[in-house]
Length: 293
Length: 224
Image 1: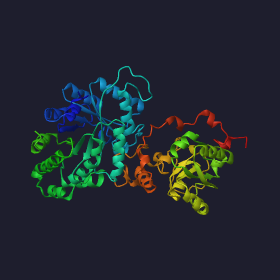
Image 2: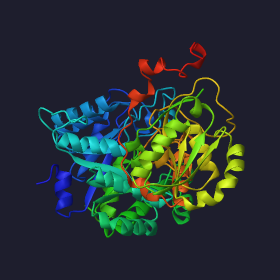
Image 3: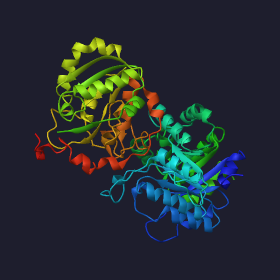
Image 4: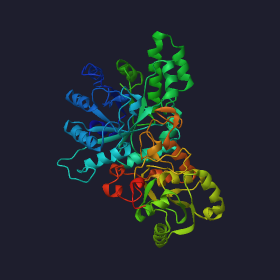
């Protein structure tokens, strides 16, 4: 038995699909409807933790709402805003709120968000927080104090297959595995050949990889990502396809590209992680074009 | 005055993995706060030898924070240094970084830098020390992750590094990209695989006993 359905499905060798929910800025819960649409189509929903360092509704509360809706969340927790006391406490809270999948990240620097003057915390990093979460699973806090009731999580982390130098990324990935990461979601992948090379290099770790999918909304977005997003390189051919597409055809072309990537990934990794960035309504079409539903 | 304290011998032996080592001592603040005076260094030397270390030589340089002085003085010792596989440096964190910048060999700090108040020798370079009290330079090729990584990470880079630059500023080098390049150059990439425990922030605030120590706050000391 897996700790979560996500783990169970990966154990069974099923090609899994995760999607992502970004809570809004405020208490409006309208965004949960997007998750409802995908209810029987994806296996779990990542909930981002103040994505891009913008103050929003929290990941922990949103994950709990998903549990109540009968959906399976992946609780994203970053090291940006909380010290080791708060991080450990939030992991205990997550467990009692029924959350079983946790994705641990370092987090973006607050300078990139809407409160750039804030104090960056980074008391722990992604590797040490994974280790701390593993210790909580053994019934102890990071100082070795006994817990009255332990946690049980399916722990995940992120890896960027397009990162340069890749050796350095793989060293960090190895550290995350040793610290307790049992699955990985990747940065957006657009170059299947490079992704295949990455998968070959990390095959020996025998840890499930969910390839990242971000739908291109325009040629401009692709160019922007190439210049500004670490580890992302959209090949020229996709940029051209998007540039040539008429405005009303853009979604169709974008979904075609997405489906091509997903089909390519199917033989390479253990699942996909879709980051819809507001295009949730197109995810069902993307999945059917990819032959996954 | 830059105040530093000797790491204990176990800590030094943990980071210095090579057997053939060369010692570099600073004759500036480090001498004054007794981390590089003859007595302290001889004691450490004795313990290093007992642990099987082969000391290929040592040199004392007036101010390790001056790269010109280091380069000039070390020229005479290049032969002895070439027989060593690692350099143990008795100075503040700035001196260790300057040595690392001048010689492509693994450098190891013999001290933890506690306090940077007052006169800072001849320090014209890019090196920085944030007085963390847990000198990491021995595991990072002599480049400080606390000063050069915007998030002060100790277990490698975050995912924001883009073309070797920091996610907060395209003009700013990623500290971990620099560390990676340096460790690669000196064939020490395996150090990066070691897990680093979360930092001990207690060490940032020196305890009251230390504040009363001679040379911590040299201008208030009447014993001089």
